[in-house]
Image (cartoon, rainbow, N blue to C red; front, side, top):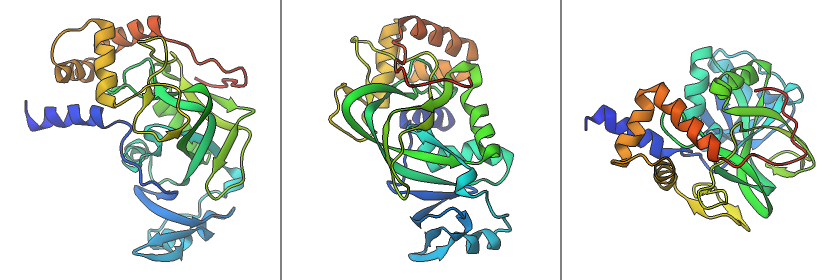
Amino acid sequence: MSAARNALVETAKRYPFPRPGYSFLYVDGEALRLNALGDALEEAEVEIDGQTVPAGTLLRQQGLAAPAPLSRRTPVLAYGANAAPERLQRKFAPVGPAVFPVLQAKLHGFDVVHAAHISSYGAVPATLAPSPGTVCDIAITCLDDRELARMHETEFRRHTYRFGPLRNIRLEPDLLPPMETVSTYVGGFGHIGPEGAPLALAAIRAEGRRFRTCSQTEALRAIQAMLGVPGPLDEFILEAVDDEAVRRERTARLRAQAQPFSYQNFSPTAE
């Protein structure tokens, strides 16, 4: 296999991609550690080369306009690739500079599980499932209207996700007060359950987890078995990357076996 083809396979297997493990300000491809956050983002304290400086200093150096204040932003759960700086850069680079906080958070009563669809880069992405007693480590992105519109563009392709408020929850974000309502994307086709229960992402830390965990590679092998597709796993991944029709057909078959997202206090407003 060529180096380029091997890189495609490795991208799929790396989902949900590395995240720094702390809250950060995303600044046009950079992830700057956040030490303090107020309504005016230019007054947020970020860490650069071991020193804490106002974010506005860096923004001015880069010729970036003052971003919208926190009070005019929408907090959105980020439990998969949307908490990873490298994937955020891939999403936002085509539409120009973006500046927004990505805050570590603990979500009670849910777990992050493998969704019932295949991404354009061949991975089995994430969604949420109710899980009483579980506390998972995720993040929230605080997006202005333009950034949220761009995120919608990337999440609504092929109707793979729905978006809306998740109410009556317990969410504890870093640098902000606890929340009882937050916006989120959930898998439009539900989640896979090859053994009758969701498969949690091993890469996402959680306490009191009820579901079996698996790596991305294990999840890919699970859906390969569910779909009855023979051959090496790497070929299975590349077939999905190369051919949208293959992805659609496989996702349709997964959807037929999927378990839907079931939580009465989620109200989808867009998809």
